[in-house]
Every structure is written in C-alpha cells, then in structure tokens.
Length: 103
Image (cartoon, rainbow, N blue to C red; front, top):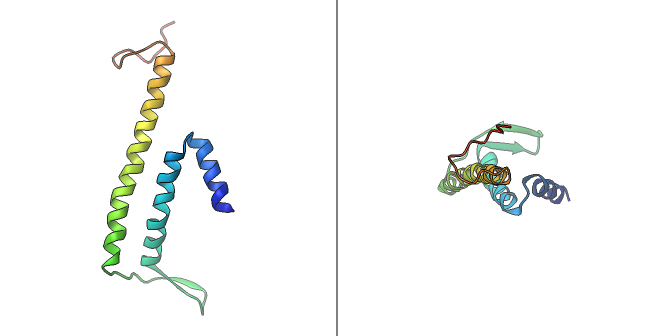
C-alpha cells in the first residue's frame, strides 16, 4: 500500500508515469546493492558492514550504470522541454530569443 501511495505522489509531482517507471526500475538495483554491502543478523538484530562480491554483483553495477544516467538525462530534458513550452507560451519561438520579459 505504501508503494502505491509513493507512486501516486511521484506521478502527481512529475506530471507523468515515465519518470515514475524509471525510478521504480532503480529500486531493485539499489536494494540489491544495499544488501550486497550490508548483512543483517537476525539473532542479534544488527546491521553490519559485510560486503559480499560475486559475479552477480557485475549485473548490479551494470544496471546502475545504465539506469542512473538514464534518469538524470530524462530529468534534464524534461526540464528543458518545460522551459521550451513556457518560452513558446510567452511568445518566444526560437532558441536564440531572450527568456526575459522586456515590458
């Protein structure tokens, strides 16, 4: 239920489900990366630093290497597109026009 609330809030803030799906794709590699680095002892109820490296860690690093830049690039270009829409709404149609109001 908490996951659905988080998804709903993220969609409402980012105005789209594409960014939400990119963030949700990051949750699995980040969680597995956390449990690759830390170990939870059920008997003592403690979390300790105990990195475990194996061949599957390569998949984790590759997935983070692909997904993190993808989310960053998507965020940058969505902000750029929003600025372009605002610029066109204000009457500036090309990139070389000024964004400032000269009234």
